[in-house]
Image (cartoon, rainbow, N blue to C red; front, top):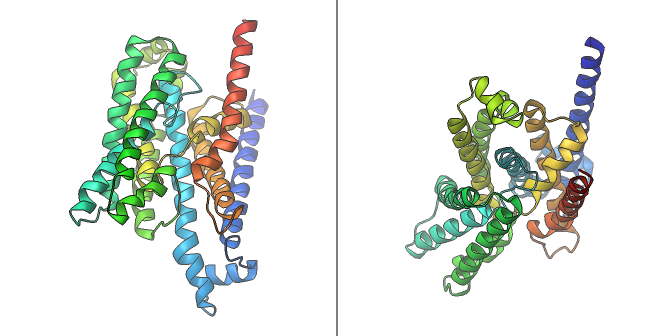
Length: 344
């Protein structure tokens, strides 16, 4: 038994090591590759604080590093948010984008931006997150209302997609009829992008996401019990109502933070948790939560690098690239799920 436990821990350690190496390689590649390619020697010098080449130093520290940090934090947050929703609904195809939660957050952020910009007021990072959180909670409330009426998860997903389309349509109308040039620039944000990140943005998202992830860790044991059934969780002393509320709030905060700073990003919250489960071959939240965060960070970093380099100087929206890689994974999940039900 002891040997088996050691083997499992070694397997987890190997998986985490692979993710950390992939993250490190992704970070270095993202710093080096872009519209201006930078050699590894110049990257090392700039990271060590050498300002001999001030142009390279500014490109790395003022443009690329904030963007990389944002991709790490937001990619990890979006994946953990999707993982929480999958636990809540007991379904692997639940996610912020599919259920329309990201679209609801996008709509409220767009409305808030228009209200403030039209009156000459600049929105702070905290205000962005707060407005996105309100939108995500409204969308989540509607999804929960529908889930009480509809027991079929497929119908719930369809309703979520419809919510997303409605919110996106309203947002498109707002952007289309806007006159202010700053408001028109909302179009790029509404498609999803890590471009234009500042250190002030990174500081805000780091605080919010770190606190939320710590709270998720504290819920690891109740989550594991909940996965084994509500009755089992109740017998272990888990307050189901409070637990569900905590899951909703934490998922909403994480997805709202992503939408506030980078716009809606598709399929990350569904595809990456699935890949992490396959990689670790476990259902333990204590293992999967950090695994999801690292996996989401790697996935979004790689997709962001592709988005800004493949057709440079034209930059693709991050959501387009994540959809290209994430959608096939979701399709495979659905096909396997259908095949397993058929055999059952």
